[in-house]
Image 1: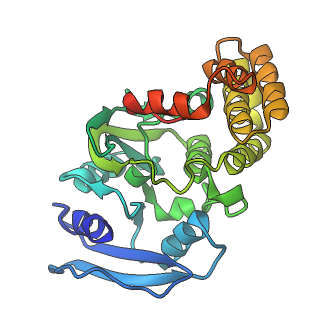
Image 2: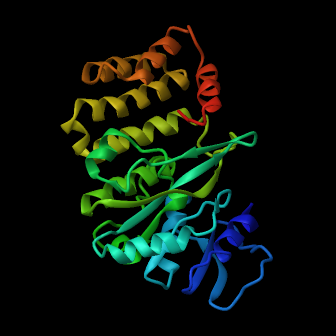
Length: 287
């Protein structure tokens, strides 16, 4: 998969130089065998910052030598035209610190196209919706923003969960996020996610984000949505009383939060988390 990911970058039709940095988390670099054309370089570095995704991303950002930095997880791939389309947008909007794209989700049996639905994503939009179509493997940043107003990836996030949402929220405070709303990234989603099933880690990170971003409290729907996700995660980790408390809190803020009702059903042992996640997966969605 790493070779596929790297090759998908090297195959981009972008006319400028491309430097591919593969970050290895506390292990020695073993780079894939790929051919390198003129203007293309590949090297590996070891993450010696905090273990995990956030420290690894920051290692790559700091090692990069060019003005633009893009992310790609090793089990995903860029599709043709991705990079040149984004560079056109970021060059046309000097105030933009981040440009994303839509994606295609590959679950091993079928593909689901996930569009963002807008060419601009604002801070208020992100408070009310994570906007699942905006995947981290599509992000293209100005490196100066990551070293400046937006900041590096937050290495204090529990297990680095939600680092992509956090950086979106921070980038959208600095300025609107631009989107090329075409599926230029293929995201592999076959149940092997590092985070899948780590429900307490998921809830801990969401509580951290809720405390870090007080803007959620500006809207009952926004704060209720995060609280409903915490509720679902806690009951799924068999902390049923705690999860039910978060679910009731969520519904007081926003009575339409489906995850809160599901959390209460799971807490009452009327359905299981497995049943809910299997149904969601059939529609190309996660929990």
